[in-house]
Amino acid sequence: MRLDKSKEIFDKTKRYIPGGVNSPIRAFKNLSIIPPIISKGKGCHIFDVDGNEYIDFVLSWGAMILGHCDPDVVNRIKEVVEEQIAFGAPTEIEYEMAKLVCETAQIDMVRFVNSGTEATMTAVRLAKGYTGKKKIVKFAGCYHGHHDIFLKEAGSAVAELRLKGIDEDIVQNTIVVEYNNLDSVEKAFKENKDEIAAVIIEPVAGNMGTVASKKEFLQTLREICNFYGSVLIFDEVITGFRLSLKGARALYNVEPDLITLGKIIGGGLPCGAVGGKKEIMQCLAPQGNVFQAGTMSGNPIVMSVGYATIKKLKENPHFYSNLEMLAGKFEKELTQVFSNSNLTFCINRVGSMLTIFFGVEKVENFEMAKMSDLDLFRSFAEYMIKNHIYVPSSQFEAMFLSVAHSENDVEKFVEIAEEFCSSKRK
Ligand code: PMP
Figure 1 (cartoon, rainbow, N blue to C red):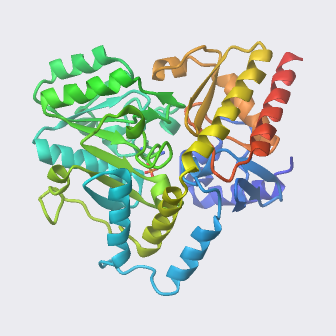
Figure 2 (tube, protein in one colour):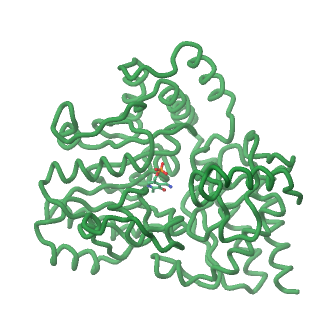
Figure 3 (cartoon, rainbow, N blue to C red):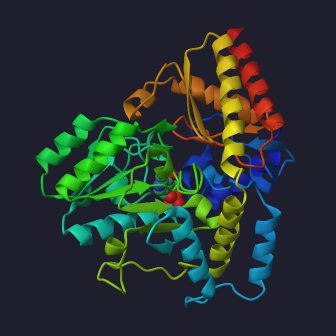
């Protein structure tokens, strides 16, 4: 695979943008290939400036559930942009989008922001304002954005870095506990009895690779928060509208007090949202005194594209069952390939999110994820990308399917994975 033009552009970009990227994971720092510079996307395919075509299993980190440049989404952007770009004033589409999101995700109220980070930051501030407490509990390996309070034992691109620039005075109010481990949560609450404003969790984690919460774990977490008067926040930035219209909550039948959304909610444009119970949401300014604001929040183009996307998910009764069927086939065939190869591995899948861990048989938390064979994962990711299958460059990320993927696309992935296994046997 030639990446000459990509290399030229990447080198030039590094002169002006640190590391050549606007988000660290994109730099492929742990791989020995440079990131292809992407120029086009259609359905589940992306193309780089050298003319290479890839089947995309990253999908803008889960956002593009309809695939790239879905015609309805593109048409909606074209229509809106003729008359509305930004006003920083109320528009009717904000009402329509808020109503659609509240009814679809079954929450009382919502506030739109521009990213997942803003959503989680606002959720935690709301919890602190509502409870009058100052500490938060988060889980090792979960990633909630780049605000200081969350950058303690975080997953995703943070997992392989030694961080600087974090305000230790702020971070000392963040208590990190182990995912799927109730003892560790109970201990944190006993030691910080009346001080914990919120527990924030990815109900299905995507940022230590895909790792599902156990049902009893989430149910008990709900009970613990009730007992101690803490706000339970489900960070559904990845899982919202991906695992179902109601996100991961539908799978567990556990109701948090607040949820955070991102990625799919903006249909690929910058968007996030915090939503949940009216009693807490109405603490937000200007109704209440918990401050949050944004010049671009609720942008009419973003709202219109989010609206078009969610409408499409909602109107197709087979949307999630079709994705589940394809993802089931993907998991089954991959399991077959890796079993035949005699490699030790484990595949974690929830709906259309999937991660392959090498060198371990089970992954239920960040410690277990970190014990996987990171070198083998690197060579796998590199092999796949060189063979036109675009996968996350890090072990601590999930792969995603969209409705634009077909059985053929999944089979192509499996075929290349099989070649990778044979290359390891030689
Ligand atoms: N929460 C979760 C669960 C995420 O996966 C991410 C981003 N991957 C964020 C929050 C932060 O979102 P953003 O990158 O839009 O700020």
